[in-house]
Image (tube, rainbow, N blue to C red; front, top):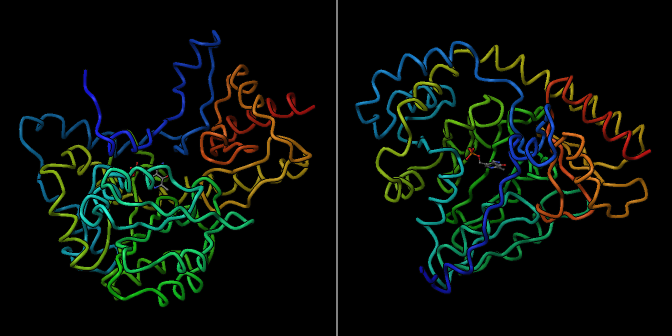
Length: 365
Ligand code: PMP
């Protein structure tokens, strides 16, 4: 029997959504539409799948532990030196590494809530204090309140933009003035997992800022728009101090050779990616319009998902999620994300979205 330390007991468990197989088995369904984990509805591009298959024959060798080739291409893409890029086993690993590298007991990390579920465990895993600052009414980070919570104990600030689960996006001007108000040497991590789905013209400005401000680390992932969450590959771009800190705690060979090869190939097909992203954005607008017609309130989203109310009058209807499950539609129950009374639906193919909207209409009627 393993007994946890008080610190271990304090680490919240990460609860992934149900798999399609679990739902199919539980309700005896043949077809299940999974719109619960903000995944791409598309498998990897054929060229990417081909590159993965071809690289399989080399799996008797360890990967390049520092992902040199991938870092070089990412550096080119973002106009930085390769020494400013780090590759992770998903961007989630980089976020956890930031906690490991920077936090100690007695220090604090400031982030928004509700936001991505990895930030709270990051604090407790290091015995640090997580300061979760409530979002404002429009689902945006309350940057003034976050700045007010920064003190001499603070070692890390995390901003999730667009925010998961609300999809709200903080404009670059607003975010820059927030950064201006923080100490120059306070590490700030901007989690841009959903950046590809942002339509605002200032999208990507934080990445440019990461070239100039050594206290910034911007993380991105191949798990969302690129459709490769099964491979686990993400990256961070930041100042030399950031990259050095993360490299000290980075496990050797943290990114697999297949992940590196796939990410490199994916970056050779950015036009195909753009086409897929455009479809997701247009489907996001279509789903939003139907929700508006159904008089179900939602937060305007810059991600590949929408956070919506579970009833027209705003009352919490937790059973809606369960009833959709019985119809073979998996969405994320808001209560599990810290937003009771709401549910988060990922944007799928047009057919999947139609199936969701039809099931929703039947349940709401
Ligand atoms: N950041 C945010 C905001 C996310 O929603 C996710 C995944 N759901 C991640 C980071 C981590 O993604 P990955 O580790 O697959 O790159």
